Length: 165
Image (cartoon, rainbow, N blue to C red):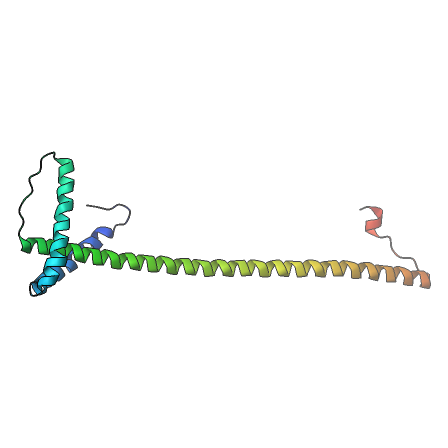
C-alpha cells in the first residue's frame, strides 16, 4: 500500500508494526500469569475484534459460519488491538499537542504583526503631525519675511504659488 500524500507513512506504519509485534508477544507471556487481565481485558478485546470482523464479513457474504477460536490467539489479537489503540492514542495526543503549540506560535506571530502595524500607524500619525506643524511654521515664517520686507522697503521676488505655476 503506497500513500501518495505522505511518502513516509508506509515506513512509519512498518516501523510501528515492528515495534508492536515483540511488545505484543511479551505482554501475552506476562498476562498468562495474571488471569484477571487475561480474561477481562485482552480476551474481551480479542472477542470484540472478532465480532467486528464477523459483522464486516456478514455484510460482504450473506452466510458466514462463526468459527470457534482458541483463547491464545484471541489473547494475541486482543493484545495487538490494545497496543494499536495505545499507540494511536499516543500519536493522537502528540498531534493535538503539536497542533496547539503551532496555533499558539501562530497567535504570537499574529500579535507581533498587529503590534508592528500599530507602531507604524502611530509613526505615520506623528509624521503627518510634524508635516502639518512644518507647514504652519513655514506660513508664519513667510508672513514674518513679508512684514520685514515691508518695514525695510525692499521688494520680494514673486511667489511661484501666487502666479499659479
